[in-house]
Length: 185
Image (tube, rainbow, N blue to C red; front, side, top):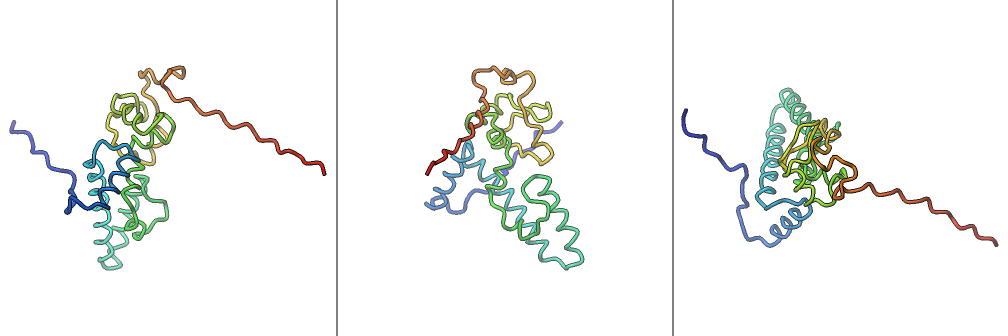
């Protein structure tokens, strides 16, 4: 056995660390999606940068070769849930980091109503209360594919699996139909 493999950074930090507009934009995104720090945002920005770079490379290829690689990239992003079914390379170039962040497990747990807030969703995932198809996932940054999206639920052994748990968010009752007042003239 040799030494453990050296861990490498999975992100590229900003070139100019003190740009006010970028700092404000990043802070808003970190708050909206409940990220722990800006490093998590930079990881997803780097991932998006790779997909966009690949799309530009494909656009530079000759037409006969380009079609195969274009379909592969679009199918991959469709399965991830980032693109719609009839997307083009222009749609890949138009992606934003918010499109990637919407596919995180933490965000989807909150959007499905399994957590009271985006921060509560992060805590549920980290503490092992959330499962995908019965398999516990403890990484809030796990990117959920389109196939797995409907399989997100509470872990079977979790106390949150009990509908009477006091911290479990309750389904909001549907608003009663508003009766229109009839005016007698």
